[in-house]
Image 1 (cartoon, rainbow, N blue to C red):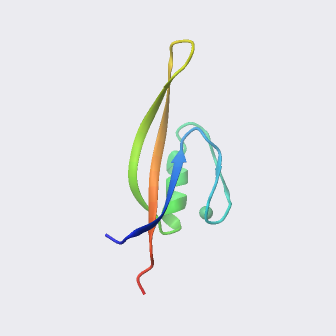
Image 2 (image 1 turned 90 degrees about the horizontal axis):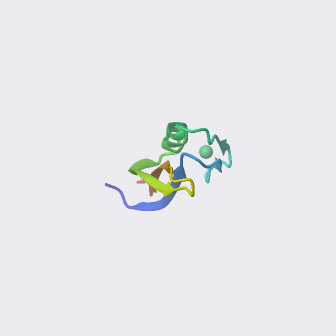
Length: 76
Ligand SMILES: [Zn+2]
């Protein structure tokens, strides 16, 4: 595995701009694969996917998917 020089984190519940091309990535629930695919197109590789849970004041849990992607240095 190449050395990872750059790491980005994407979340399913947040609208985010791509750190590479500044494109707006959608924030709809369940759309995290769109963000992941977008970063894969930039040469990133998927490092980790996780679920983060938050307890809401009404007693319900709010689950959010988080993905960590990393990009290594290009081998010349
Ligand atoms: Zn991009």
